[in-house]
Length: 101
Image 1 (cartoon, one colour):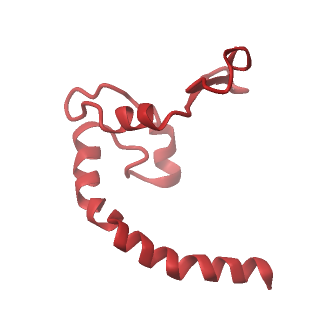
Image 2: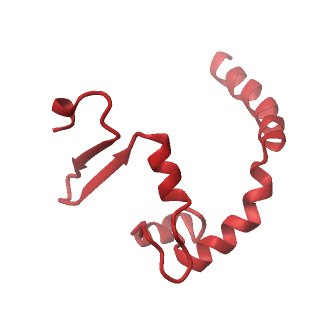
């Protein structure tokens, strides 16, 4: 259906082999709306990723509601543009060197 809708379609829906369905959001404004939507005791969107907790633990990817909000507030300062740039300045050259050598 998304091929018929054209390239401007902001969503892609697909079925996974185990019968569940997923939606990939392609529009930055919609992603922003989802990420900054109501959260806390009554979240607007649920991630339904509890099955990942044994693999990756409890963090921003798997938490919901007030727990997610607390973790997000704790790590937010680490994602300021100056800190991200400093990290990229260190990581990118090393990664490129690994692929080249």
